[in-house]
Image 1 (cartoon, rainbow, N blue to C red):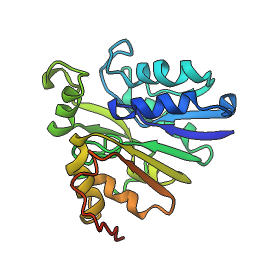
Image 2: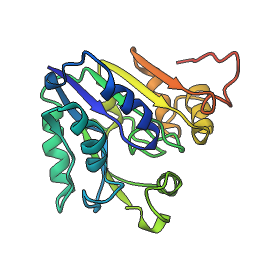
Image 3: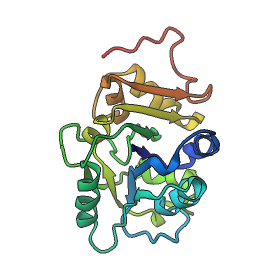
Image 4: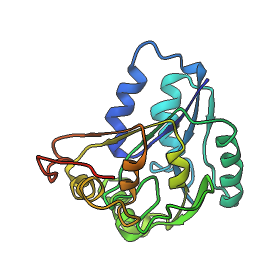
Length: 218
């Protein structure tokens, strides 16, 4: 059984399409967790990450072992339940993205690099909430939930392998801050540079501000 973490968001559309179309993957032998979910948003809402994964991953692969975060009326209880399942065995690979503010999952700056809980209830900052509007999920920031359940940074780093897919020019400033600047809670995804087996996939737009002679320092 391969245990994976799946990312969501507009930046993952093309990647998930390629992944779910790839031949030779034994999907019944895959167990899936996901990174985060809004608090107070029904699954029927277009921005729901449960809906996203059901439509774009689960229905296309036939994966039968999956754990969706359903905050309901007890977000903390949902976080504990799925967190216990998550920690039942090692995670083989985590697919992640990077937010416009450098967030990793919904760990906005300043991110907590120390807390060991598998999932956290977090407050979404204004830059994060505006990103959701920019991507077309909500009409304006007032509609974006203020809280979410997010996998913690330390939990993400426990995965044996991490693959970050980060396209789009809207991510260029965050990419520069996270992969040329210091490793810092103010650039949460910069922590990926400490992982022994992390790969970052950029496109020309998201990499546009990087120095040609980029050298990543740890």
